[in-house]
Image 1 (cartoon, helix red, strand yellow):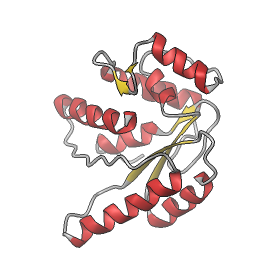
Image 2: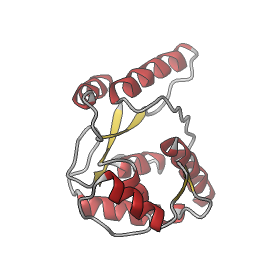
Image 3: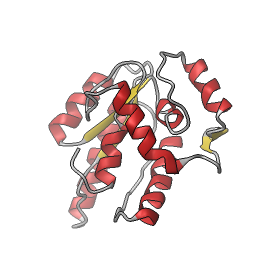
Image 4: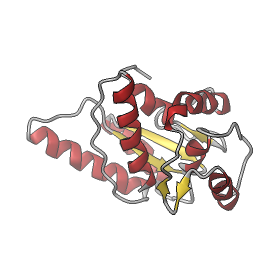
Amino acid sequence: MTEKQYVERLEQYLRASRFRVSVKSVGVGKDPREVVKKCIEFRKNAKDKDKAFDHCVCLVDVDQHTTLQEAIKTAQREGIDLIVSRLKFEVWLLWHASNSTSVRTTKQLDDLVADHKLLSEKRLSNQFPIDQVFEAVRRARAADPELSSGRVGPDPSSAMPVLVQLMCGEKP
């Protein structure tokens, strides 16, 4: 839910800034293999209706998923950008407010996100600093200079800058 809400808020922010972007967000669960399968299905349905997408992107966490490597291979084969966050998506959210690059447990990361008031329950807070997205991009690239789609980076890392670039009309 948080990922879908974040992408929608980012879309609004970028449109208000100067970028032409249109995103179709679909929340489908946590299993990386299922996320990629649903994306393939969604893309096929859109193409069948002559509404093909310029890019298809899936957001997944490393967490403890045993299907991640299969999802990476399938996404590569299908031409889908798989954006992997390690340990989980909240590291990307944290980089909007903090330069923290220490390895953390899930609980430590959740506590830091709470300390910065980035989430309310499992939703982005009304005060979430979406305007710091390009600072988050800088921090993510500093944490993982080799970040790319379909790659599991070091802990912590996120390939979300790839999505930001795509949404800004740039090639990653």
